[in-house]
Image (cartoon, rainbow, N blue to C red):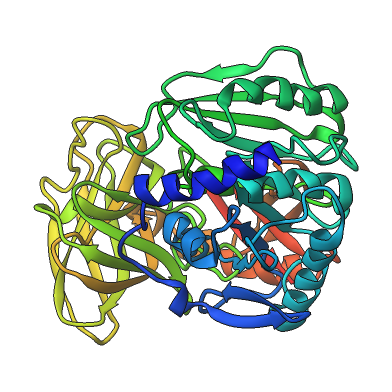
Length: 487
């Protein structure tokens, strides 16, 4: 009862101290549904792929889905990463969660079943998170439905009243503020240790001081690998009170997404020191793999949209690079000539700045200076040619700088070509007819087989005919390295 009273008091404190997340989508952008007579609010990104993950985010006591959404904005991550978000509403009365029994965990199973039916989500990649009492419920769910939830992210909530033994070794990430005056920080260490002991985790944590965290001072503690290869993480947030925040949703997602009920999910390997752009066609199986968004004074999002990358600038910057989509890991050879081509169009006419440059300070431009292109509402192909006059760079990048105009711009079919790859051979016909041997690897880097192909365009056909399992494969041969999808 003392815990429940403290949580009730915390509601007033949380609203006064934190308030809404500001800007962006609201719960009105979510679809309201009913599961067994109780409300849930669902957000599914456009162009959601089949068998995408599901994340369920539970509010605190005497709060509601609106408050949880205002302060976490999970849709911002879901748009880029491609997963479904559900904000469920707690029980009647004080909007509480069953943190000792199985009433609400059974309801979670019903929610999952409905999402599978409506959105074809991957049942093996369902994740549960919650704030305060929602975090306490998340811990309780580890003891009840860990066979249905792949990984857990309780925030500012310790299950002081529920079962303390997990159903199986589960991945856990637990953010908690040091100034939490409801569920006090001094109980976190012993509570997490209970699970570390259950899962036979290493006694000593890997400690990352000054963990980068949206302006807040944070320390990340990591224990693992534990039984079944799981990890436990604790994010210590200096000075944070008892409040949810969108600051850590990306950190939470980057941890959760590594796991399925089958174990660790194989990650897409982006080759480094390569001579070509990786995933320049924004394959449906790769989406935005290899690309990321940087913001320096502006604000925006990057998401996969109809087979292209969509940069949506919501707040302009002083410079075009204030919102930029980049890819690094590219090898630029001194004295070599290159051509960069890409397709682009926008929701309204605007300019786009493109650069080929060093990936670290002083960010030397290998074009001499960034090039500016006029982009209209119709898709058009653009190109820029240059000679690499600087010293060889094994980790250069290409950047698309869009920070001077609000609205969306779409990028597709980004190709970097070396002149020596298309000209300068004594007998080009002989070169084109020469059969090459390529090595095939799965996305975890394990060798699969070798294949022979005369043209790069033949590789996909050969892979499809080799009775390989469905999935992504990295094909390498000399400087060539590319990811292919076998369906």
